[in-house]
Each structure stands twice: as structure tokens, then as C-alpha cells.
Image (tube, rainbow over all chains, first blue to last red; front, side, top):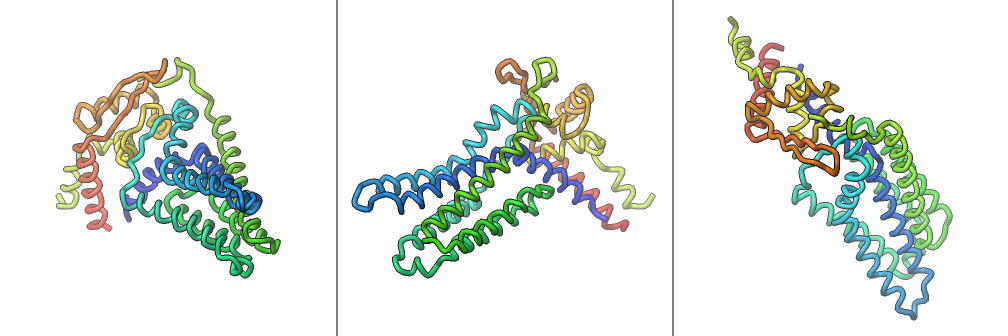
Length: 216
Length: 102
């Protein structure tokens, strides 16, 4: 018999609080939609103009936003929406190794997509790219599960990633379009899940009045 | 008296109390949390939570900072290094007892 699971369960519940409002999913969903616009934009914009160059600058911004500003952006929303309702929690900052791993994952992911997009004729043979990306994202979402038990919506999102990836691959479009469609579908799914979670959270937790707030 | 049981009587009574143990465990996983969050997570009344926090603060286990966020009062609580140590020791004592008696 061990007391440790009880201690762990309490600490996991505290960590789970971060996901309670759906704001994280909404911000990440927005990033995926920006990524979809980037991939599709490359195909639509005239090659002989400077527009694709500006678009690449946009990708750098999306990546920087993803790596450095996502948590900050979520925190700004939380300060206005979550903390006044259900309380403020300051989590330990991401450890250096985790931070480097985050940079590595984002850079590899973006690099991989750009590489695939740029490898001329071979692109035509890799129509299963969205399916591959969907499986990758589904695996990443499943990996969150042990840390944040009882967040079943992450299973549903993993399912959506896999299905959207397979679906986009089966359309047999140019990978630039199918990858863009996949990112857009998954981004929308995250936005919708996040918005529904936020709506439920706001209904269950109305803003306290000055009288009912922290009165220690 | 059995040595294992005697070890158990040595546990820190301040941490051993269920409500305070819950507060300390919650705070051990984060840098800080406010009064509203602690109240929601523990299910304690304001007065009860306040009393337990005062005891933990007196022992130096918890540091409490009172500020304002706009018009709303904000009470932020942190588990100090002494508090972390006391909680770790308590968990170890309990684990040792469980291991020896099960």
C-alpha cells in the first residue's frame, strides 16, 4: 500500500487546472490556422513577386510565436478570464531541457514541412504527408494523457488529427493543399474544443463580486 | 511500543492534519497559488482555510503575501523551503511506515 498516488493525484489535479478553461487549445488552434494560411499562401502567391518572401518572414513569426510567446499569450488571457474566477496559480517555469526540446520539436516540425514542400518532384509521391503529420500530432496528444489524466478531450483531438490527416491524404491533392487543409481542419477542431471548454468553464464559474472574492 | 509505530508518532503534527496536508501538497507542486484557488481545491470555508494558513505561516512553512488586483484583494501563498522539507520528511516517514507494516 502506498500514499504516493494520493499525493500525485493532488499535484496532477493542480497541473490539470492549466487546461480547465480551454484557452491553451484556442491559442494553439490559432497557430495551426496561421500555419495553414502559410502553406496555402505559398501555392497561391505569384512566384515572381516578393510576396512569398514576406510569407516566409511570416512563418518565422509563427514559429517565434509558437516557441516563445504561446505561454505568455495564454497567461494574458488567463489573467483576465480564469484567475479572477477560479484563482491564480503560478507554475514552475519550464526547465531548460524542456525548453530546448520544445525548440527542437517546433523547428523539426516546421523544417520537415518546408523540406517536403520544397523537394520538387518527390512532393508528388508523398501524398500521405497529412496522414503522417496527423499521426505525429495524435501521438504527441496521447503523450500528454499520463500527465493530465481525466482530460478526455485530448483523446478526441488525437482522433480528429488522425482522421483529418488520413482524410486530407485521400483527397489526392497537391501536398501543399492537403497539408494546408489538414492544418486548417485541426486548427479549427482545437479552436472549437477550446471554445466549448471555455463556454462550459464560464457557465460553471461566474465572475465573483467584490464581496464574494478573496476575503482572507 | 513497536519501533514502527513509535516512528509514526514522531510525524510533524502540523503537516499531519488533513486540511493542512492538502494545502501543503497543493502548494508543493506550484510556485504559488492564491486564496481563491486554495479554497476551491480544498473545499474548506474561508475561515477554516484562513486559520490553517495562519498556522502554517506561523511555523514558517508557508509565506503569505497580501496584495490587491484592481479592487479585489489577492492573497498569494507559497510553500517555503522549510515547508517543502517538512512535507518531504512527512511523506518519507509515512512511506517507511507503510513499507514496514504492509
